[in-house]
Length: 345
Image 1 (cartoon, rainbow, N blue to C red):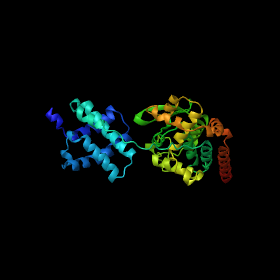
Image 2: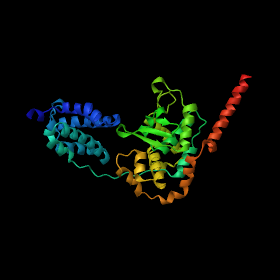
Image 3: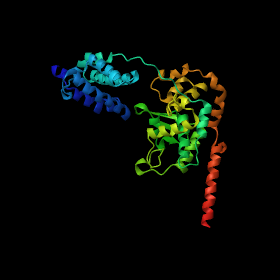
Image 4: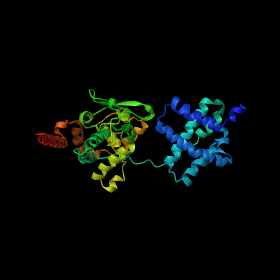
């Protein structure tokens, strides 16, 4: 037991990342990377705190006093906000849970860390778009441009499916079921959820895949959204696309109140709430881990938007045949076809 207590910290950390997070917990690569960043900060601090080298750190060095000092240092010297501090603490608590699970002899040490409370912080405002703003954003896209139609489809899918930026970046073509008009989305914790799409979104996806999707490089054949280099769109690329069109419609002051990508997710949650959907259905649509994350939408005032909701609902349920932007696109293509035909005479 003495040898167990004096176990090297590096051994536990390797087990944490190589086995516990991936094989036992099944966390996503992004979460694992975030946890890694926490320990890259913690280890040098712990070594300095105890006046020893990093390789000399042992498991018993991870005390509640050390962790509290580390968290305070994050706020004072790195100017981290309470929400970042809490995220770092969550990573350390996950490590403590592994210690308690694999080494029950160290339960007291692990419990001392797990008992550290999170710091209260201001909850961010739920920044959502109004229905008329969403329609204006759709209308701002020039679908006759080279990448315009892709952006048009992307924005519709962002709103309809309420996906996160990382989720839409990872979408594959075979996640879309054209017959059933559903999209499978790989979300947090590598868990899939199935979302029923509105008719318009499904029609746009079919047309995009069949006619407008850029030919991808071999390693990106499976990806749904492709950039101009033939590679899959990244989270950062999706962020830039959203910010571009939001900036064309919204004022600078309004832009500061919302997240360019996440606002579509919040807006869809509000729309489902307006339609009278059960909170459990909204939870499943958004892929929340627990219903508490979803209930915050219940606290928002929704009465002032009901009068324009029907316009957006009708739009999302409409066919492409009555989409004026599609008429312009097809007219433009017909003109190009006739010009090519004349050149061939």
